[in-house]
Length: 437
Image (cartoon, rainbow, N blue to C red):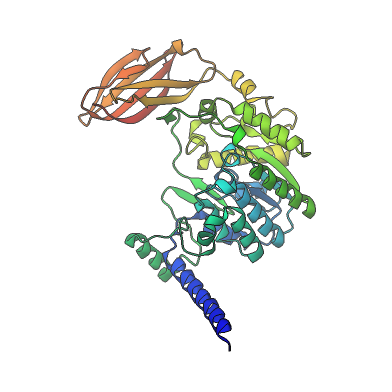
């Protein structure tokens, strides 16, 4: 054996042994016990067939429960959303799923938070992407996906089983729980356990921490939806999904799941995103169903239907799945009367409402500004009670005041609670922490 061949062989053997060792270390250190993505991807491979597939990110996993959709549609439904899933992740999961099952319909949720993610060449964090790639079984799909999500400078991290964003942990407590799950077998039974959530089967996660009605609050000003940030990368991947569905004879339906009006109204330009989606889908021959524009006589959502400002709670998932199925499957909701023509039209049709409050600390921490998030309410009709709790019990700082700038007691820290009233009727009860100088 000549010298060059021996060196080449040694390099190959070293690389193979190193990779196998990395696999072993990654298996031992991977902290994915609390990942519902791991459970749902295992369950995806265990189906007899999937007739209807829901694709998207966490809106999908917190949106449609197949437990209800199966009964109302008479088909086998599956929700394939994972936390932070990019459009390329949705495409990869769809490619894997169509190789296994005869899918009839695909519902693709096009949330603006996903659509405006940076293009692959501009990405730096890949935790959500590696969550998907870990459980894609087809090697060709897996590696095509992995090399599509980042620029070449991240390829080494992408190829190796261990690395940044790959759920590695050195926390002794987490490692002890992981070893315990190996010993008692729960890890290999793909059991999901979390005090705040419960797994409802076939990709649906139910959050057990609903927002109390009237408590939506934010502590910073929100920026507008950057519709101009929707990349050609996102558009081309959606086109790949369209092409795949056409090739397989699958009906593809574009939709957006409803967020809270507090969340959308503070963005200030939701109709701009709606117009983009409508034009984008229609130019490709598709309709677009945006449930943020649904009429309240068919879809009336409360704060407690959400677990945060844009994901459903358990109650919301059950309520909205029925609405969704009544529209698409049972015919209980008329197709030609479900939606307003715009988000602005929907807001104009609502009763006067304060969605929630922004409680904004001043730069010098000496005061706080209250900014109500309202539909078409004149703010002169709003008053506030302001309470301070610095650890010695709650005291009233201002009562039924019209002032939106509140001076905080100097040298204190604790909690500010603001109660809002519209024409004297109580609307919101929101809290924030403060430290004043």
